[in-house]
Length: 240
Image 1 (cartoon, rainbow, N blue to C red):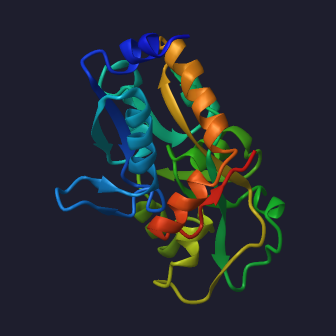
Image 2 (spheres, one colour; image 1 turned 180 degrees about the horizontal axis):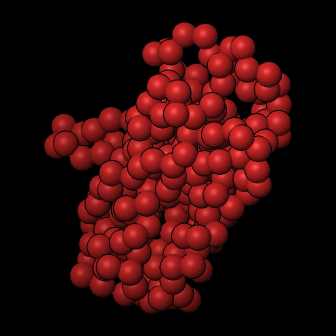
């Protein structure tokens, strides 16, 4: 594909619109003086725009579900969210450029000592339903019951107020959680969110170009340097 083809799909008017998931506290770690999102995700979008020689407009969404829902609404040209099978029906994803472990928070007195043991009959797992890790649980949990909500705060409340036995979330989020005494984080992970760049499936030339772009930068220290720049501890750069 030519760069002109890619530019015509991603920025026909000279502006690349990048969908940004504002609920990911590791990929969006602050804001600029102008009030725009700042962090690994916005910086990665800026690099895409730079290589296309176009301007950048960041389009913030409150959560990844809202961003994914807009895939066919002509609101964004690239979207930085976790790659999951349900989302891939409408979005063409690159390979991952970084990943984030997801695990469980349980009461200290809980009998659970392994990730696998949580998937048991009668166990209720609180989870942000449309997060990438929530979608994974929806596809993979066999015996436990999912108590789904639309935000991490609601899922935490479901757990802390006794409506669930286990809280599923990103490990870095749980490591920083100090509002509830007498809890522990289980070792290991039930999955790792694969953060990627997506574009609507109609953008075939752009999808191929973005795939090559990610393959190139994951062979360098580009993502690792962004993680260090923004202090995004808990993100793991994918190296190829």
